[in-house]
Amino acid sequence: MDVEYKPRFSFEITEEQRLRANTCFPTYGLRKAIFGKILDDVCKLIETHGGMAIGIMMSERVKIKDIIPAMKEVETYKKTKPKKGA
Image 1 (cartoon, rainbow, N blue to C red):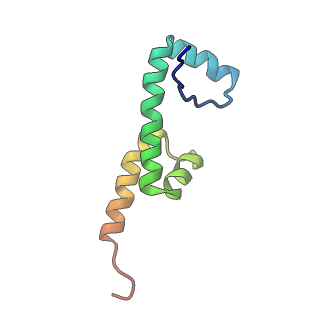
Image 2 (cartoon, rainbow, N blue to C red; image 1 turned 45 degrees about the horizontal axis):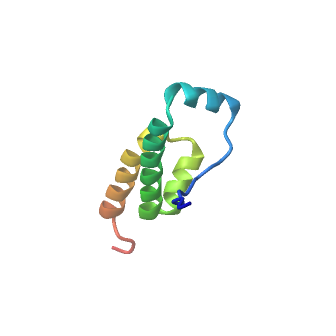
């Protein structure tokens, strides 16, 4: 029997999250499609911005939908801020 390995990613959620997710994503295919894209986006943010992106997400002061614009503001500031000693 030739069974192809398919990696999984799992973590605990609350019962409320499970119920909401089952309503929002009623099929496995939709869950896989949505959460695969979210995982790719979050990994890209962390690869690009490291601990800063993790800190912003964990602070809960910025919502996920606002992270990319917030990171662009940080990048713009880093490029335009005056150099020390100049």
